[in-house]
Image 1: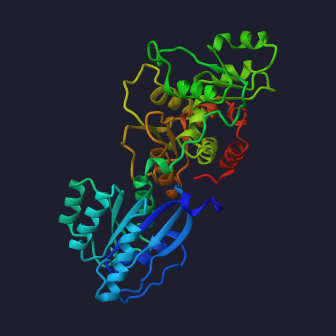
Image 2: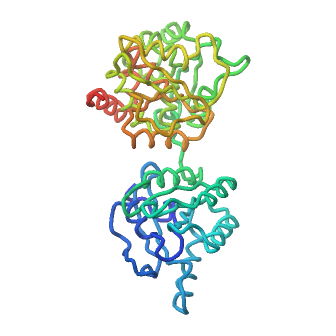
Length: 413
């Protein structure tokens, strides 16, 4: 990422009136004193750029700008340069001081809307007073994201990073391959697809279809079997497959039926990197070994669906985790967009594969959990841990396997 050309980085512009705290905010976001900070209005004259690696977005360019309310002939030139920056940013932060919004910010918002540039309003200097309630209500009615912070004290800076991630264009969050980087042209991949109550009639679930498409895009060969036919299918092959991918619910049987010299993983583990930060989710899986009776666990479903009698998220995973912990756990299930702000009470978060949501949404959840020190994993990794085959299922991904082992060695909560 450090070698990413500036033209390929997400450009984030920081705009507002003089002395609203734009430069202080930029310094707080990157943890360095890049922009000069002073109580004297108009300290920033020309735009100040800084390349940075901003978790979880990756490589970005921050651009600090002169105040849009600058005065005089020289001030007019500074404003013109600031408006030129507006034309090349991908995301904008509109910084407002403790006094609240004025016509300057409203004009800026109109300009950003006209350019289809996503933005968030940052009410700075919360240590001097909270934002006007009526302005917050109006912005909420307009579906505009707001954050209240104190850049000087650091209060709320993590929320600004979250807002940037939510506002970033989807195109800036590149989806990794599912299996394309694990196989080559002509390789054989065996997909083990059980047909159970959870399988939609006449169709396959989305991760299975996506994996099939990635195999075809890689000019490889896919063979699909049910779990009962796997051993016989492997025995008939003259050449061993490059990879076996199975549904997590049959991972124990598939692991037993797949010779150790053939790599094996699960659809859900593939989704862990396709839809999130696989390394973080693997480290979170390691925390399962530290669960103890009475711990609180959040099961997070990205979509709302009719719960089956033996539902994977609401029945099976809670049962397996309780067995693994050796006693009862306080299991809480949230579905859809219902993801708690305060995660501090949870010993573990288990997120579904996220096949119906964007990668950005899963990464935001991971980032929030990491900021609050709560381990987070996904369904597939949790199931593989509970079935005792996680190390086998992660052999394809050495960095993730190392992260899982780090998670196991982490200090107990």
